[in-house]
Structure formats: C-alpha cells, structure tokens
Amino acid sequence: MCGITGIALSDPTCPVEQDLLERMTHSLIHRGPDGTGYHRGPGVGLGMRRLSIIDIETGNQPIANEEGSCWVICNGEIYNYVELSSRLERAGHKFRSQSDTEVIFHLYEEYRETCLKHLRGMFAVAVWDGNRRQLLLARDRLGIKPLYYANGGSLGLLFGSEIKATLASGKIAREVDACSVKNLLLFGFVLSPGTMFPAVKRLAPGHYLVYREGKLSIRQYWELHFARSGEADTRAAVSGASSCARSSSRSSGCTCAAMSQSGPG
Image 1 (spheres, rainbow, N blue to C red):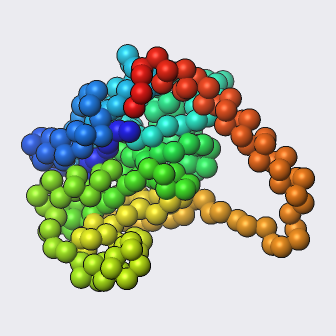
Image 2 (cartoon, rainbow, N blue to C red):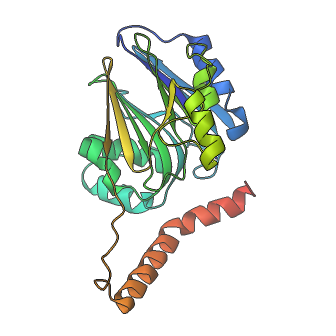
C-alpha cells in the first residue's frame, strides 16, 4: 500500500507551495513508511509515500521520462509490467529501473490516454504531461485502489489516495454533505461519486480524469460486460477463467518473490 497526492493549478505557470504539498503528502504517511518523494514544476506538485515492494533500490517515485517532461506516481501494482517492458523496449523505449511504475509513462508516451487499456493490475495513477500542461488521473478497472479529487475552482485540482490528503491542503472546505449523511444512514454507504464532503469526489472504477488549464473531463475506459442467458458455454467459461488465472500467476510471480524477500506488508 502506498499513498499518492498532488495538485494541478489552473494557472500552469504558477509554482505550487512546498509546504502545501508536504502537508498533503505527510497526511498519507501511514500508507507508505519506506520513503517520501516530491516533484514540483510550473503548475503542478506531486507527492508520494512509498511502501517498497518491487525494485526496492531504484523504484522511488515520482519517476520521470528522459526529458523530464512526463512524471508519474502510482499506488498499486501493474501485473503485466514485464511483458509491457519487453514490448516497449522493442519499440525503442529505454528503461532505467525494474519498477512497474516506469512502464506507465513509457506506455503513456506511446498511446496517451488509451495506455490504460493495456494495463492489468490494481492501481491509482497520476501522470503529469508537462508538454501538454495536463494531469491524467486513472483508477483500475474494479476500483481496488482508491482515488479522490477536489475541484478547487480558481486554485486548481487536488487529488489523493484518501480524502484527508485534499483536506490537508487547507484549500478545501470541511463542510459535511447532509445528503451523503442521509445516504450513509439509509444504505450503509455514500453513493458514488459523492463523499462526506461536497467538494471532494471519488473517481469511479474504470474511469480516468483529465485536467488541463482549469478544465476537467472524466471518461470511462473499461466496462464489465455480462453475457446474456444462454450465450455463454459453460466449458468455454471455465476454460477462459483458468487461462486468466494462469496468466495472472505468471505475471505476478516475480512480485510474489519480491514480497517474500521484503517481508509481510
């Protein structure tokens, strides 16, 4: 478990306050005891609290491409990163680490937002594209890893693995949403994309958010499809499930080895 947070300013030329970014990142210290990382540039600030699992020595985040124009932070794990690394190397990309996170910005350079369709895993990811002055936030298909955001209006967009990261900025009102309280008491949970705070929203599973120069858009990149009754052959379904399980085991084998070396957590 790691923690990511950050802010993209509506004015892409302004610097992000260092103490603001540190407050937001420090609020997630319980999610990542092994290290802290920051990136501040014109119009953007990224923060990371890391729990080291894969590539313990050189997998620190945020991580950037060769030109320093693309920065990435990720909470989670990309199961098929070895396969993707090999494919990207054949396409001419050069890797500096064995980290699964490094795969993301190389994949982004190749496919832009559609890179998400190539990822298999559990993840919440933020990609800052300095050339386009654009922040991309994305969540895995089933929403295993959490990701929240708050539109700060003229300030910009704040985000974090937990709501407290956005509140730690001091820029978001701590007002409680009465409708969310009602839903919590009625249903036992708060209806998505809402939270207990009206200014803070939850990014839905299988969706990505793009924020650029004060404009925000959200799109769905994956949807679960169910076969109609009678369409799915039982044997084919069992065979497909077995194939997926074997593929997942092969992809995560190196991760299991890394976890056994680094201990529980």
